[in-house]
Length: 152
Image (cartoon, rainbow, N blue to C red; front, side, top):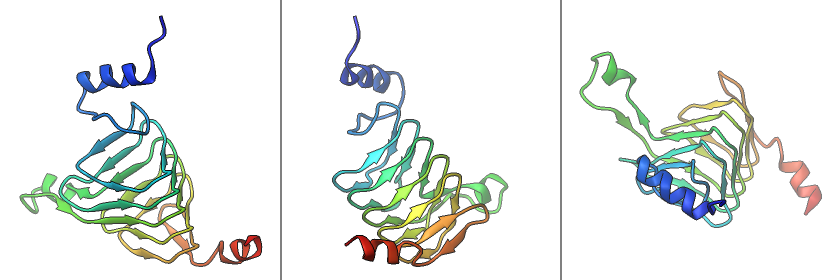
């Protein structure tokens, strides 16, 4: 007997705090993020919107092992404050986020941008058509603009 994906997700949801979602049984969605149509989120990724507004535009491709997390608790952990810092995240339409990337609270990623695998996106405003790469991150504004114009 091979269980269906819906059955597997039901079992997994009962065993963990992973809510049912339209993506993959092993995608952890916390809070109520606003996620557009035709979005793919790969397994073992996290979208944490608990306590802040997280918006993911339409037609995005988010690879496996990606963390999109509005919360930062490092200052709380070391005793500098009593609560975690919660900041909004906005990801525009047609954004690709590579595997093992981290999108921190306060990040605003413009439409038609690419976050390279393994990149840590700090709080900032990234213009549309950009390539974001590395740790520390480097933003290459307009990196894809000419190619998209040529293909239109």
